[in-house]
Length: 267
Image (cartoon, rainbow, N blue to C red; front, side):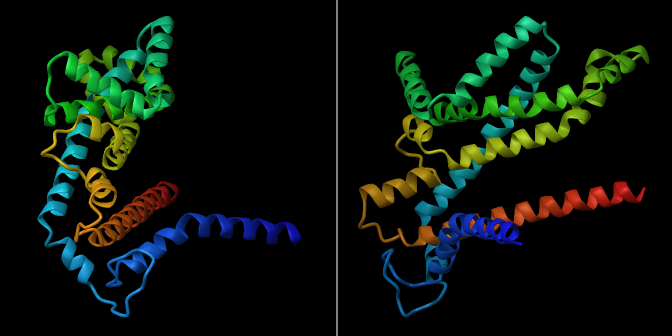
């Protein structure tokens, strides 16, 4: 009995520690106060109205979403190709490339950011949207590889050979057998890449041109460099919307997965 009480208490403490600040932020997004730490007597949707009428914030949101989708799509394609190539290579070659792929994951992000900025300077490649896109692909590519490789290892290797024996070309066998088998890993890698791109600040700040802002760089600049910015309170509404979208997405994915499990068990 005591063990169950301690387990429940520990679980609730973890949940409160993780989600209480976010819940407070959501509640705060409906308060008309312009300063964090002080409450206004007015409760309304003024911050949401401010959010959707501020051109700079809307532009930052558009830039962030477009950058995340484009860089994640490129990283997913390259990462899937890289994972398949590594998997079917010789063991020694696989170990070498697997180690090389793991290094950017454990490496400090500031090192990657400075390195990319230095490369752009040495090659006389100015900070443009292209440099920003390349930087985000470099950031997310290793995570796609690490998401696809486990699915390749779980796949029955005889399936691909069977497709070749039945007359399929290597390319057709790849797209009709291998890709469908590893599609959950590809989808997982794509979602991880989007999450990393949406959330990144350091690499983005070092490689973006001055004319482009993402949500992370806009929020940081608004709070740290321009405290007089009148649109700062609207960032609370933006954060609440992002949290709501994440919750809805997670619930939808879990419901879909549970539905597939029930259908599989029903069969």
